[in-house]
Length: 103
Ligand SMILES: [Zn+2]
Image 1: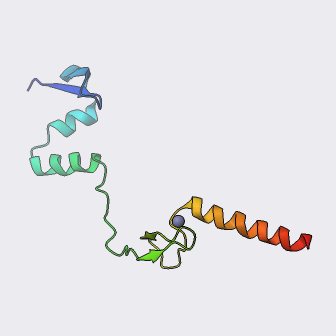
Image 2: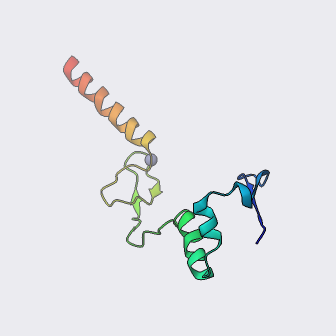
């Protein structure tokens, strides 16, 4: 059996053509497998695993303590809609502390 194996990069550009003579023993064995089912499962194992959707992930309706906007955090304990808001509150608290110290 004569065949070519074309290798493309991720942009669809042809990178190289592997001819039978260039194949390693391992890949020859692979291509000569009688069972297409086996080959298919092998090919599938090369693919990236599908992104597992985490069905346990729940989003909560919360109001940001800083900007009062509604947001949907993954954790029920989240208080801020964003890191910016978290930082803002942190800086305000810091300022309050230093103000208190001054008095
Ligand atoms: Zn916010």
